[in-house]
Image (cartoon, rainbow, N blue to C red):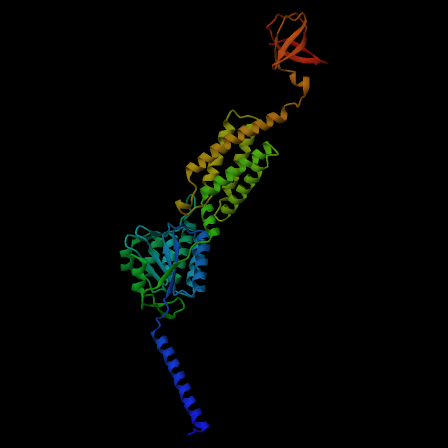
Length: 441
């Protein structure tokens, strides 16, 4: 019996519908069983002084963490402090971050000293590892002591800057201000008891587990819940440029480049045509000036360096029995020592580096300048002219003519009087191929 065509259409429709339902059901089941994406936490390690290079690194770390869609940015902090201007810029980058910023003073033995305390308090979540400390954030002058009025203005400004965001983080404003006004420092336990930090944790894993599910209040007042359990930590490494600048921004390295480059340039002038010393010295001086431009410089120190150069040149030209050279070296040493206006010892010039560089540069400069001046003042002579003034020895009796030995060469000579063989003579003139000599006085 032949079935009608409509019957087969109904059968096909039912079969296709069932197949589609099965496929859709499998997709929903797989979707339901698929685990949630693992959260990512970007980590930036700041174990250096606070200055323009680390400022650039932190700002870049915030931007990279936002671009990769991280749940939070974890900053592992260990710093003695640094420049207040760089601190303000770094705090601004943290406060304006679109993702939560977690600052952890770690590992054990680390500190958030001086400017580092401002960064710790600026974080959405502030944490410290056991065995760490934070505080001692009173502003200081780079060299010497500020007058009372200026010190009061700087301190009040720093305290107001700290209060502007500590209160919005719901932390202890009075205890935070004590770290600035009275240079108070806190251990991890004391900071937690004073409500300067939110928690303590010995490791990153412990820190993230404690923060999972915690609600935080951002600077704009919005409330956000952290989901950080089992998060994958991705380390943000500095770029090659940042690593190079971080090495060059060391004032001792910058000064050695400056002094060494200056000597190479002078060597090029003293021995022209060598090219390599001049090119290398120019590169070293330019690199050192670039590095020093990132640091706070005292203009009075630059005047001392200029005075040192003048004193060393005068010693080489007019001679001061060493007095001008000694004054120049001392001026150079003091200028190098005070060149960088460092608020913390870690950013200052090592005294041994300053004195060693000054003594070496001063001594070499005086020696090379004297050689150059002596060469410039001596007459340029060729042939027999070059023998005038040289010592000679009579090889035979001169009566009054005979042969003499001059500079390892035998010449005919004539004297105004008879002289015995072996007599010490001096060349005073020449006549064609014959020298005129006289007894050496």
